[in-house]
Length: 78
Image (cartoon, rainbow, N blue to C red):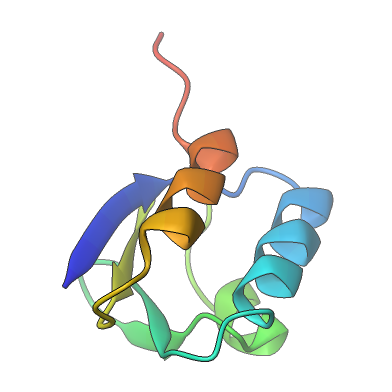
């Protein structure tokens, strides 16, 4: 399993992230302390508290290329 912390701080970020996830043929989930949702569902993504980073979970053997594309969503250091 692959995991990464990401920040979706705008509607455009959410749209781009969901478009990216829908290009994959494996399951991708987003989690926070309380919920685990399907990352391919734009309504599901918007149901999370996006003011905080969320965790992406990928249960696939060959998801390195997808994980590399997630770097644009990594939280910025303060």
